[in-house]
Length: 193
Image (cartoon, rainbow, N blue to C red; front, side, top):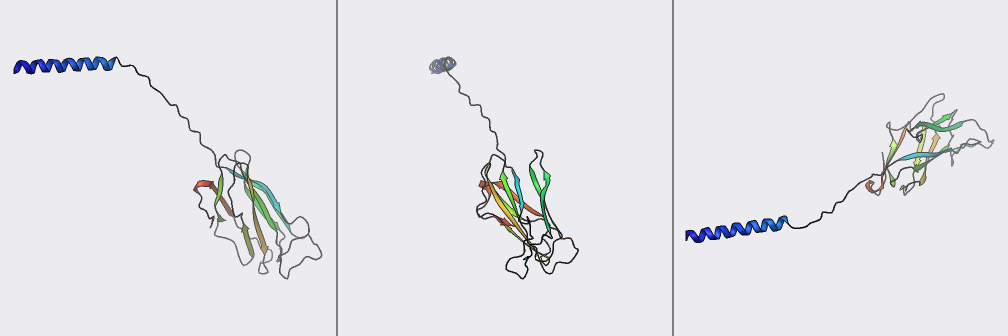
């Protein structure tokens, strides 16, 4: 029995060596994949800036205020304030000079997608808690669909009306912020803060 176990052990060892030799003689070829991922860029800028006061002062519609004489008393100045490192306008300054009750300019700002990925307006609103709503009435209008493909544009309007309760010789200020994000992470409805 011992001899049979020894013969079987040697036979198994021989088969193992034969299998190892066969495995080492197997031909093979390896395929490789070299992968590069280049991400896109989310980037928007103010492309065009306009104010409705380009002559006689615009007055608050459907009110007792009027400018039948066509006087040009107040001034609406809309100009770039901050540029990014590539010279794109990322902050705008709106200044109303010599404003008075009933004065009602409408500012139109054009947003352009200068990146490579579609974007949507994620949220917008006043950054400093708002404005003196007794002295001013501010209405922001954004498009219903704010999605912008690369090189696409849309307009945002800011309607500023000076109220009868505004104080004479007083400065009022507020800051607005518009945040855009990649289109596939923005909910269907735009948030107003």
